[in-house]
Image 1 (cartoon, rainbow, N blue to C red):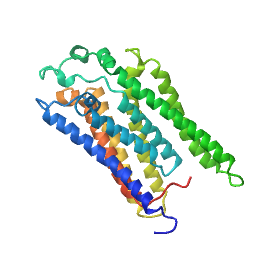
Image 2 (cartoon, rainbow, N blue to C red):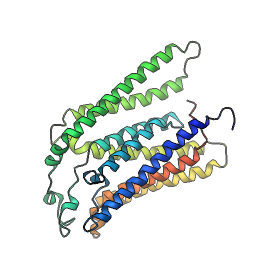
Image 3 (spheres, rainbow, N blue to C red):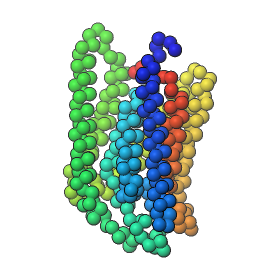
Image 4 (cartoon, rainbow, N blue to C red):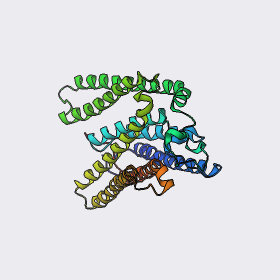
Length: 313
Protein backbone atom coordinates (compact mmCIF):
# COMPACT_ATOMS: atom_id res chain seq x y z
CA UNK A 1 0.00 0.00 0.00
CA UNK A 2 1.48 3.35 -1.07
CA UNK A 3 1.95 6.34 1.21
CA UNK A 4 -0.99 8.07 -0.47
CA UNK A 5 -3.38 5.25 0.40
CA UNK A 6 -5.92 5.82 3.16
CA UNK A 7 -4.98 4.44 6.59
CA UNK A 8 -6.33 0.99 7.56
CA UNK A 9 -8.69 2.47 10.17
CA UNK A 10 -10.29 4.69 7.51
CA UNK A 11 -10.72 1.78 5.12
CA UNK A 12 -12.20 -0.40 7.87
CA UNK A 13 -14.67 2.33 8.86
CA UNK A 14 -15.57 2.87 5.20
CA UNK A 15 -16.22 -0.83 4.68
CA UNK A 16 -18.20 -1.14 7.93
CA UNK A 17 -20.59 1.64 6.90
CA UNK A 18 -21.05 0.21 3.41
CA UNK A 19 -21.59 -3.33 4.67
CA UNK A 20 -24.04 -1.98 7.24
CA UNK A 21 -26.25 -0.63 4.45
CA UNK A 22 -26.28 -4.04 2.77
CA UNK A 23 -27.13 -5.62 6.11
CA UNK A 24 -30.13 -3.38 6.81
CA UNK A 25 -31.53 -3.92 3.30
CA UNK A 26 -31.32 -7.67 3.92
CA UNK A 27 -32.91 -7.20 7.36
CA UNK A 28 -35.79 -5.22 5.86
CA UNK A 29 -36.41 -7.90 3.26
CA UNK A 30 -36.40 -10.63 5.90
CA UNK A 31 -38.71 -8.68 8.22
CA UNK A 32 -41.24 -8.10 5.42
CA UNK A 33 -41.08 -11.77 4.42
CA UNK A 34 -41.70 -12.84 8.03
CA UNK A 35 -44.67 -10.49 8.28
CA UNK A 36 -46.16 -11.96 5.11
CA UNK A 37 -45.47 -15.54 6.24
CA UNK A 38 -47.06 -14.91 9.64
CA UNK A 39 -50.20 -13.24 8.31
CA UNK A 40 -53.41 -15.28 8.38
CA UNK A 41 -53.63 -15.76 4.61
CA UNK A 42 -50.21 -14.67 3.37
CA UNK A 43 -51.46 -11.18 2.58
CA UNK A 44 -48.98 -8.78 1.00
CA UNK A 45 -49.49 -5.05 1.47
CA UNK A 46 -49.91 -2.95 -1.67
CA UNK A 47 -46.71 -1.04 -0.97
CA UNK A 48 -43.52 -1.60 0.97
CA UNK A 49 -44.18 1.67 2.79
CA UNK A 50 -47.45 0.26 4.14
CA UNK A 51 -45.41 -2.04 6.41
CA UNK A 52 -44.87 1.07 8.53
CA UNK A 53 -48.24 0.18 10.08
CA UNK A 54 -47.24 -3.39 10.92
CA UNK A 55 -44.78 -5.03 13.30
CA UNK A 56 -42.11 -4.29 10.66
CA UNK A 57 -42.22 -0.55 11.50
CA UNK A 58 -38.98 -0.42 13.60
CA UNK A 59 -37.02 -2.23 10.88
CA UNK A 60 -38.59 -0.18 8.08
CA UNK A 61 -37.89 3.18 9.73
CA UNK A 62 -34.46 2.13 10.98
CA UNK A 63 -33.38 0.78 7.60
CA UNK A 64 -34.33 3.97 5.76
CA UNK A 65 -32.63 6.14 8.37
CA UNK A 66 -29.43 4.09 8.19
CA UNK A 67 -29.40 4.03 4.38
CA UNK A 68 -30.07 7.76 4.26
CA UNK A 69 -27.34 8.47 6.81
CA UNK A 70 -24.83 6.34 4.90
CA UNK A 71 -25.59 8.09 1.61
CA UNK A 72 -25.04 11.46 3.27
CA UNK A 73 -21.78 10.65 5.05
CA UNK A 74 -20.18 8.58 2.27
CA UNK A 75 -18.16 10.72 -0.13
CA UNK A 76 -18.90 10.53 -3.83
CA UNK A 77 -15.99 10.26 -6.26
CA UNK A 78 -17.11 13.52 -7.89
CA UNK A 79 -18.86 16.57 -6.48
CA UNK A 80 -21.95 15.81 -8.55
CA UNK A 81 -22.19 12.23 -7.29
CA UNK A 82 -21.71 13.48 -3.74
CA UNK A 83 -24.47 16.07 -4.12
CA UNK A 84 -26.85 13.51 -5.61
CA UNK A 85 -26.26 10.98 -2.83
CA UNK A 86 -26.53 13.64 -0.12
CA UNK A 87 -29.91 14.79 -1.39
CA UNK A 88 -31.12 11.20 -1.87
CA UNK A 89 -30.11 10.41 1.71
CA UNK A 90 -32.04 13.40 3.02
CA UNK A 91 -35.15 12.40 1.05
CA UNK A 92 -34.99 8.81 2.31
CA UNK A 93 -34.90 10.16 5.85
CA UNK A 94 -38.12 12.05 5.11
CA UNK A 95 -39.68 8.86 3.70
CA UNK A 96 -38.88 7.12 6.98
CA UNK A 97 -40.44 9.84 9.15
CA UNK A 98 -43.57 10.73 7.14
CA UNK A 99 -45.66 7.57 6.62
CA UNK A 100 -47.74 6.63 3.62
CA UNK A 101 -51.53 6.65 3.92
CA UNK A 102 -51.87 3.27 2.21
CA UNK A 103 -52.41 1.15 5.30
CA UNK A 104 -55.64 -0.75 4.96
CA UNK A 105 -55.22 -3.44 2.29
CA UNK A 106 -54.57 -6.48 4.49
CA UNK A 107 -57.35 -5.45 6.89
CA UNK A 108 -59.93 -6.06 4.16
CA UNK A 109 -61.70 -9.38 3.59
CA UNK A 110 -59.76 -11.52 1.15
CA UNK A 111 -62.63 -11.62 -1.35
CA UNK A 112 -62.72 -7.81 -1.54
CA UNK A 113 -59.02 -7.00 -1.94
CA UNK A 114 -58.27 -5.42 -5.28
CA UNK A 115 -61.81 -5.95 -6.55
CA UNK A 116 -63.32 -2.50 -5.92
CA UNK A 117 -61.98 1.07 -5.97
CA UNK A 118 -59.83 2.30 -3.12
CA UNK A 119 -62.47 4.88 -2.20
CA UNK A 120 -64.86 2.06 -1.32
CA UNK A 121 -62.41 -0.15 0.56
CA UNK A 122 -60.85 2.26 3.03
CA UNK A 123 -61.82 1.01 6.47
CA UNK A 124 -59.24 3.33 7.99
CA UNK A 125 -59.64 6.69 6.32
CA UNK A 126 -56.80 9.09 5.65
CA UNK A 127 -57.81 11.60 8.29
CA UNK A 128 -57.81 8.96 11.02
CA UNK A 129 -54.33 7.82 9.99
CA UNK A 130 -53.01 11.37 9.88
CA UNK A 131 -54.44 12.19 13.30
CA UNK A 132 -53.19 8.94 14.82
CA UNK A 133 -49.61 9.64 13.71
CA UNK A 134 -49.64 13.46 13.84
CA UNK A 135 -47.77 13.85 17.11
CA UNK A 136 -45.03 11.35 16.25
CA UNK A 137 -44.59 12.84 12.76
CA UNK A 138 -44.51 16.38 14.15
CA UNK A 139 -41.86 15.55 16.75
CA UNK A 140 -39.59 13.60 14.44
CA UNK A 141 -39.95 15.84 11.39
CA UNK A 142 -39.43 19.08 13.30
CA UNK A 143 -36.32 17.53 14.86
CA UNK A 144 -35.05 16.67 11.37
CA UNK A 145 -35.61 20.22 10.14
CA UNK A 146 -33.78 21.70 13.13
CA UNK A 147 -30.82 19.31 12.81
CA UNK A 148 -30.47 19.90 9.06
CA UNK A 149 -30.65 23.67 9.59
CA UNK A 150 -27.95 23.54 12.29
CA UNK A 151 -25.71 21.35 10.12
CA UNK A 152 -26.07 23.70 7.15
CA UNK A 153 -25.30 26.69 9.38
CA UNK A 154 -22.23 24.93 10.80
CA UNK A 155 -21.00 24.01 7.31
CA UNK A 156 -21.47 27.58 6.07
CA UNK A 157 -19.53 29.06 9.01
CA UNK A 158 -16.78 26.43 8.78
CA UNK A 159 -16.43 26.98 5.03
CA UNK A 160 -16.15 30.75 5.50
CA UNK A 161 -13.53 30.40 8.23
CA UNK A 162 -11.56 27.88 6.17
CA UNK A 163 -11.64 30.15 3.13
CA UNK A 164 -10.46 33.19 5.13
CA UNK A 165 -7.63 31.26 6.79
CA UNK A 166 -6.42 29.64 3.55
CA UNK A 167 -3.93 32.47 2.98
CA UNK A 168 -1.89 32.03 -0.17
CA UNK A 169 -3.45 28.63 -0.96
CA UNK A 170 -7.16 29.30 -1.42
CA UNK A 171 -9.41 26.41 -2.48
CA UNK A 172 -9.89 25.90 -6.19
CA UNK A 173 -12.96 27.27 -7.92
CA UNK A 174 -13.96 23.68 -8.70
CA UNK A 175 -13.95 22.65 -5.04
CA UNK A 176 -15.89 25.77 -3.99
CA UNK A 177 -18.56 25.02 -6.59
CA UNK A 178 -18.66 21.38 -5.47
CA UNK A 179 -19.43 22.22 -1.85
CA UNK A 180 -21.73 25.12 -2.76
CA UNK A 181 -23.95 22.95 -4.99
CA UNK A 182 -24.40 20.33 -2.28
CA UNK A 183 -25.15 23.01 0.32
CA UNK A 184 -27.63 24.84 -1.91
CA UNK A 185 -29.49 21.62 -2.80
CA UNK A 186 -29.82 20.64 0.86
CA UNK A 187 -30.85 24.18 1.84
CA UNK A 188 -33.46 24.26 -0.93
CA UNK A 189 -34.89 20.94 0.25
CA UNK A 190 -34.97 22.30 3.82
CA UNK A 191 -36.92 25.38 2.72
CA UNK A 192 -39.42 23.34 0.68
CA UNK A 193 -40.02 20.86 3.48
CA UNK A 194 -40.31 23.65 6.07
CA UNK A 195 -42.98 25.43 4.00
CA UNK A 196 -44.91 22.19 3.45
CA UNK A 197 -44.66 21.31 7.14
CA UNK A 198 -46.50 24.53 8.04
CA UNK A 199 -49.69 22.84 6.78
CA UNK A 200 -49.13 19.55 8.60
CA UNK A 201 -52.22 20.18 10.76
CA UNK A 202 -54.42 20.19 7.66
CA UNK A 203 -55.53 16.61 6.85
CA UNK A 204 -55.87 17.58 3.17
CA UNK A 205 -52.44 19.22 2.88
CA UNK A 206 -49.71 18.32 0.42
CA UNK A 207 -47.49 17.45 3.38
CA UNK A 208 -49.78 14.66 4.54
CA UNK A 209 -50.73 13.31 1.12
CA UNK A 210 -47.77 13.88 -1.19
CA UNK A 211 -44.51 14.32 0.74
CA UNK A 212 -43.94 10.60 1.34
CA UNK A 213 -44.58 9.51 -2.23
CA UNK A 214 -42.74 12.33 -3.96
CA UNK A 215 -39.74 12.05 -1.63
CA UNK A 216 -39.49 8.31 -2.31
CA UNK A 217 -39.80 8.75 -6.09
CA UNK A 218 -37.23 11.55 -6.28
CA UNK A 219 -34.82 9.69 -3.98
CA UNK A 220 -34.91 6.58 -6.19
CA UNK A 221 -34.45 8.76 -9.27
CA UNK A 222 -31.39 10.37 -7.68
CA UNK A 223 -29.95 6.96 -6.84
CA UNK A 224 -30.34 5.93 -10.49
CA UNK A 225 -28.43 9.09 -11.41
CA UNK A 226 -25.72 8.12 -8.89
CA UNK A 227 -25.39 4.70 -10.55
CA UNK A 228 -25.05 6.35 -13.97
CA UNK A 229 -22.43 8.76 -12.59
CA UNK A 230 -20.48 5.82 -11.15
CA UNK A 231 -20.50 4.19 -14.59
CA UNK A 232 -19.42 7.45 -16.21
CA UNK A 233 -16.54 7.85 -13.76
CA UNK A 234 -15.28 4.36 -14.58
CA UNK A 235 -15.75 4.89 -18.32
CA UNK A 236 -13.27 7.75 -18.15
CA UNK A 237 -10.61 5.66 -16.40
CA UNK A 238 -7.42 4.51 -18.09
CA UNK A 239 -7.40 1.05 -16.49
CA UNK A 240 -8.86 -1.60 -18.87
CA UNK A 241 -10.31 -3.35 -15.80
CA UNK A 242 -12.63 -0.36 -15.33
CA UNK A 243 -14.68 -1.48 -18.32
CA UNK A 244 -16.21 -4.36 -16.38
CA UNK A 245 -17.43 -1.93 -13.73
CA UNK A 246 -19.00 0.22 -16.45
CA UNK A 247 -20.95 -2.84 -17.57
CA UNK A 248 -22.04 -3.67 -14.02
CA UNK A 249 -23.15 -0.13 -13.22
CA UNK A 250 -24.84 0.14 -16.61
CA UNK A 251 -26.72 -3.10 -15.98
CA UNK A 252 -28.00 -1.89 -12.59
CA UNK A 253 -29.05 1.53 -13.89
CA UNK A 254 -30.72 0.01 -16.95
CA UNK A 255 -32.53 -2.62 -14.88
CA UNK A 256 -33.85 -0.04 -12.41
CA UNK A 257 -35.19 2.16 -15.21
CA UNK A 258 -36.61 -0.82 -17.13
CA UNK A 259 -38.51 -2.32 -14.18
CA UNK A 260 -39.78 1.06 -13.00
CA UNK A 261 -41.23 1.79 -16.44
CA UNK A 262 -42.50 -1.77 -16.95
CA UNK A 263 -44.27 -2.12 -13.61
CA UNK A 264 -45.55 1.40 -12.93
CA UNK A 265 -46.04 2.30 -16.57
CA UNK A 266 -47.73 -1.02 -17.27
CA UNK A 267 -49.99 -0.53 -14.28
CA UNK A 268 -50.92 2.97 -15.45
CA UNK A 269 -52.05 1.71 -18.89
CA UNK A 270 -53.84 -1.36 -17.52
CA UNK A 271 -51.26 -3.92 -18.65
CA UNK A 272 -51.87 -6.01 -15.54
CA UNK A 273 -55.64 -5.57 -15.34
CA UNK A 274 -56.17 -9.29 -15.94
CA UNK A 275 -53.69 -10.21 -13.18
CA UNK A 276 -55.46 -9.15 -10.01
CA UNK A 277 -52.55 -9.67 -7.64
CA UNK A 278 -50.01 -7.85 -9.81
CA UNK A 279 -52.50 -5.08 -10.53
CA UNK A 280 -53.09 -4.53 -6.80
CA UNK A 281 -49.42 -4.82 -5.84
CA UNK A 282 -47.67 -2.84 -8.58
CA UNK A 283 -46.27 -0.34 -6.07
CA UNK A 284 -45.02 -3.08 -3.75
CA UNK A 285 -43.36 -4.88 -6.66
CA UNK A 286 -41.59 -1.83 -8.03
CA UNK A 287 -40.42 -0.77 -4.55
CA UNK A 288 -39.14 -4.27 -3.74
CA UNK A 289 -37.33 -4.58 -7.08
CA UNK A 290 -35.76 -1.12 -6.86
CA UNK A 291 -34.55 -1.52 -3.27
CA UNK A 292 -33.06 -4.89 -4.25
CA UNK A 293 -31.15 -3.22 -7.08
CA UNK A 294 -30.04 -0.46 -4.71
CA UNK A 295 -28.54 -3.24 -2.59
CA UNK A 296 -26.87 -4.75 -5.67
CA UNK A 297 -25.47 -1.33 -6.61
CA UNK A 298 -24.13 -0.84 -3.11
CA UNK A 299 -22.43 -4.26 -3.16
CA UNK A 300 -20.86 -3.58 -6.55
CA UNK A 301 -19.62 -0.15 -5.52
CA UNK A 302 -18.32 -1.49 -2.20
CA UNK A 303 -16.17 -4.03 -4.05
CA UNK A 304 -15.16 -1.49 -6.69
CA UNK A 305 -14.03 1.17 -4.20
CA UNK A 306 -12.83 -1.01 -1.33
CA UNK A 307 -9.23 0.30 -1.49
CA UNK A 308 -9.88 3.90 -2.46
CA UNK A 309 -9.67 6.96 -0.27
CA UNK A 310 -11.58 10.24 -0.21
CA UNK A 311 -12.06 12.14 -3.48
CA UNK A 312 -9.59 14.87 -4.40
CA UNK A 313 -12.02 17.73 -5.09
